[in-house]
Image (cartoon, helix red, strand yellow):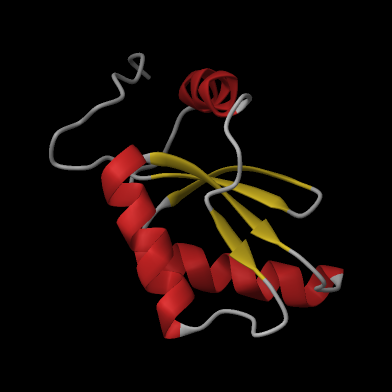
Length: 99
């Protein structure tokens, strides 16, 4: 997992601003299928938004922790029910600023 500097997080937040969530977590919570979808989206885009609906604050935090643990992605930011994740793919599509 990459540790992002504040500067890099700011840069990624700017890129993520116009993105729509690519994965939605609903009543079924975090399933293998949802995790696979997140992994796939990260491989493809590197920077994605995940919408975690219908969970209370504690449950939402547990889900976020699990997603980060399972995908090895970096949590760029969480706003309300939206989680912004970053994980470099082999092709390194996003050029991060130096730390």
